[in-house]
Amino acid sequence: MPPTPATRTDDELIAATDVGTLLLYGLTRDAFHTALFGDGAVAAAVTLDRLGVLPRSVAFLADTVRAGGVQYVAELPEPLPSADASEVLRGWLRTASDVAAGPDAEARAARWLDTVAELIGARRDSRTPHQ
Image 1 (cartoon, rainbow, N blue to C red):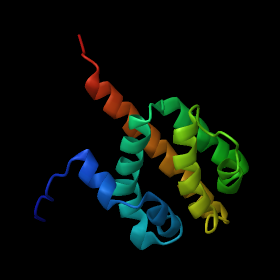
Image 2 (image 1 turned 180 degrees about the vertical axis):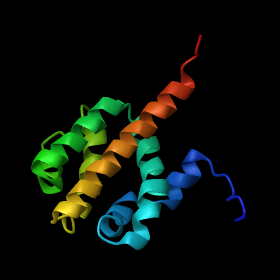
Image 3 (image 1 turned 45 degrees about the vertical axis):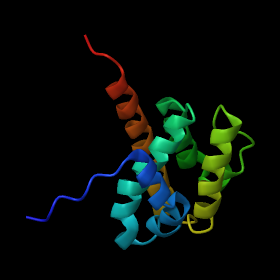
């Protein structure tokens, strides 16, 4: 059984994770797929959640990537409701758009955005008192 990885705070994860680089390599290279959908998705979710982004906004962008592609979404004037969150996401997607030219990479980018949306939702649910 592999050893349990050390726990990290959200701040440590964000500091240690370059989401743009993980997108750059993770969309086209299978060796980076786990890192992209693991630490990369969690770091993106934490970052966007801290900027007040709702899960449905990111899920909508996943659908938009499926319809128009990563490049199209990266060029939207305001892909998310706030300017700060839009700038962060746009930076990640601009990096990814250089390699996400084929249908497999586009589909993987959309799945990654869906994963980020689910993680934002899970974070929000964990903060909400349940009755």
